[in-house]
Length: 365
Length: 270
Image (tube, rainbow over all chains, first blue to last red; front, top):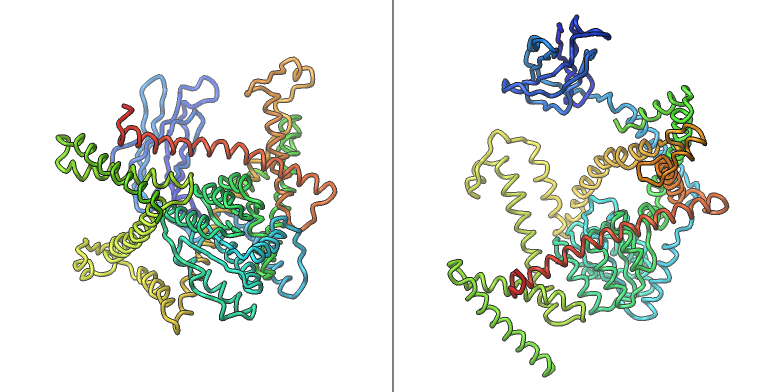
């Protein structure tokens, strides 16, 4: 083989190198002498390392997952029953990162469509148009649960998960807290909120304070409603369990990001007879909430609940925009599954091509 | 405190002291600080049993373990935040004099003016403590939320949307060579044609109906509602499987604690 060329792959993250060569004259489709091409990489003038073995007829290769600050050199060994012939080594080269990564053009397109839909619906909501969001079962229980706590003269315990404010689940929980705190202020019920993150404490205090002010009871607000416990997962759980059994809240909200502590908290809440409304987007924890709580907001229902309760154009618009995404997904899945079935099962070429095109667009690159 | 409580407290104290002496004796000869080692194992067993006693009801031993855990962990994470993040990561990249003062090696090659951004944001965050300048703490909060949202958008768009769609594009009929061939080679084997077809149908219908369940712009009535109910059934079956799987994992954690009690503390099992 001759003319081995190594070149930086254009419009990428600076992690790919393209190799191309002219195959050996002995590499023939029938009765060829070449048995394989072995590709060797030399990193930073080190020892050559075999990175791939290609079948006869191959004339290109893409070396992926390279690093920006290393130098790379290559050579290709042509294998045959006779002696192995090595090509010249390419000059040491480095990869370059471009501003645009065209490998991700389809992802950009999908992001553009989804982002556009979200912005469109946010603007629509801002103009005052009422956006329909379907009824969510768990939400109707919120008023009932707060009323129960008021009647029983017992507090409401609000647990916003154990993640910080950079988790969208915590943000959704804080939004729902705003609504809950508003009603708590109106009914003059007590609310207790132990948290595992200092930033969540700050945000929660501001939210509850604003809710009390809106309800016309600013004097009833106290910073002690929200208290920081510890960042340690099971230390926090031990403290919350203690609060549950000692203060016996009538209603427990478990909304946000939960992990191994979900069942411990939900079971303790269940054992004291509290009405429990839970919600998380952590699939592994949902079974525990469903088993031990009265109402569970499953996955995206938590965010929908947040949007529904707040009525904020940004949240409602975002929810509607995501519905557009789901609609696109359903349409693509229907067409794609039909195309794959007819293309693979019955060999209809047009359908096979359509399926391949869809797979390429939704390949995640 | 009731008399019975005093008796229990005294009993636990006696058991603790006896255990400490016994454990210390068993470590004597193995290690120089055998008394401390005996205390640590006994104390760990005491805390384990104190936490487990919550299964009976709330009690002073649980309260002690709880408060100890909360206090130590809160202090630990604060120290970790300061010594690991600020002293361990930030100062060696910003200031040679501060590095010298904290006795950490200064990494001159890593110096970057951009590291002042988190310093400023961190100070702004502390403005929360000031009643007049408290509003400044919203800026770093907005930065954290905004940056995370932006970064996660791409990550989730790829893993939870695009890749999921691509993985659902499966043929509903696999390796079809006619009805005769299908029945003549019919098998319930996991690698057989029938199971492959059923699996693909489950994937397709499960994802499609699940998406319908999470569609909020339309009331779930009629055919749409029925599809949504199929979706929630699929979710519940998945949750059931996940429940069993996770409980098995938790049992292994319990086994770990039981092993500690019976092997390391009581030395009943080998």
